[in-house]
Amino acid sequence: MKKIVRVLIFLMAFQMEVRVRAAGDVIEQPAECLKAISNCALQVTGSSFHFEKAEQKLHATAGSAVVMQSPQHWRLVKGSLWVEDGRGLEVETLFASFKASFGEYWVLQKDSRVLVRNMSASLKVTLRDGKVLDIPEGFELWISALNSKGQSDYGMIEPINMKEHLVLWNSLYRGGKDDFVREVRHYRENWGDLVQKSSRLYQHLTEREIASVNEKEQAAEARRQRKAAEDRQIKELYRQRVFER
Image (cartoon, rainbow, N blue to C red; front, side, top):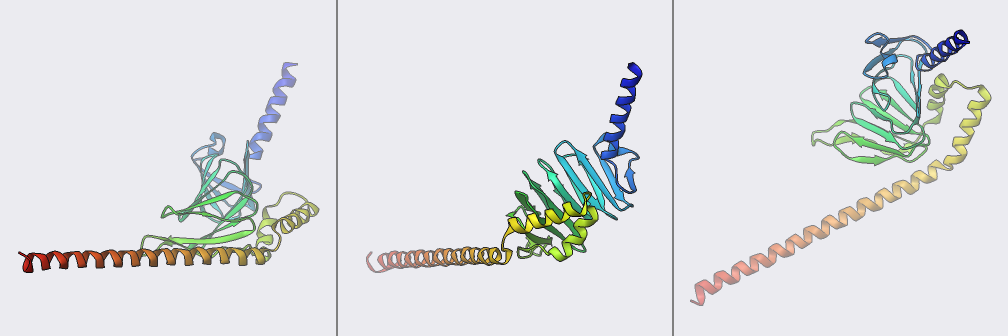
């Protein structure tokens, strides 16, 4: 009986270890650091990397370099990271950090930019200058370094380029072809008309920008009026001192 229990424990341990190791080859630094589930630098030299633990499930493409500081905190150095289930998980990059309370998203390091694609997540993006952005489902955004004013450069929120994304997604997808097609269809149905949503989003941003400009103009006019009133008061005081003593 004890022998059977030992065999079962061995099999369970083996299966758990396999789940946190790569589908292909991975260089771990320090060696076998994945077993410690902390402070582990990984270079994906095989076809892909898959990690599952509790409520964290993520995948990296071939050639990616990532650092796992803990199951809740990852850093993408190079390549692409698919956060399939990232409740309580934070992904950090050179230009921004990403966190979602639920859902899935992608973070891609592309040349001197980071591209984030929100598939279904309640996603918050914190830029290096401290600004926080909300990325709607079905949209992507590129982020770059700080500019000369110390502000993070980033692009317009745009619909996800699915023609490009499907190839990348399929390279990490571990289900069958029918399952993959079903998930793609599910997203397209849930997202609805992204072009129409983009139009409404840009209109909202434009209205906010116009409102901001109007507020600035009103504030500037108020300052001009206050300055004119102060100048009149000073002139009146000067007149009284000179001519009414």
